[in-house]
Length: 166
Image 1 (cartoon, rainbow, N blue to C red):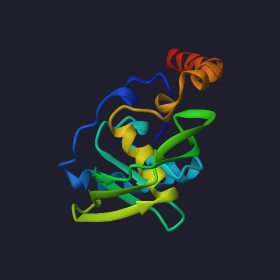
Image 2: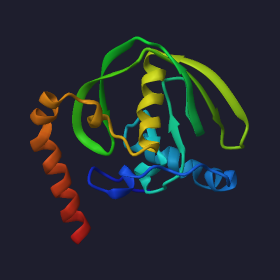
Image 3: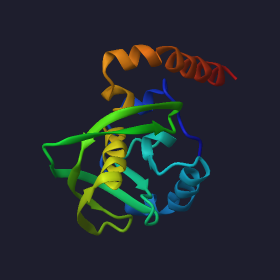
Image 4: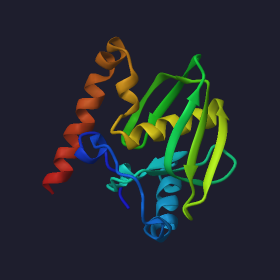
């Protein structure tokens, strides 16, 4: 599996719900290996060209597959923290995220789970969840920060164009 980068249209599409859990299980190991080999703490299906609503994450407590996730409740308060993204290589910036989120999702077998996530796990979940709606972390940045990063972002997209022509 190859991680798609900024400029790839699949990263901006809203992903469709998973109905075939066997297909998720069939790619689970390769998906997990891709995330870890890229030094990621999360990886969403659109990042590897699959426009379906699932992602993997590891907040330090082991890999977890999150399928058809929902954020059913969140804090009013947000906190800033540095984020990066495998699809926006080399770019890091502070992003405001909810301090906690109550989530509901299915695992790779279709079983339902509900959890309250706080801090780092909540940040990872929100970041990956955004990917399923075609949103990247850079979309949350203020205009001043986006302008400051514009050359870096332009370079990433130019590199992608070169790769596509090969």
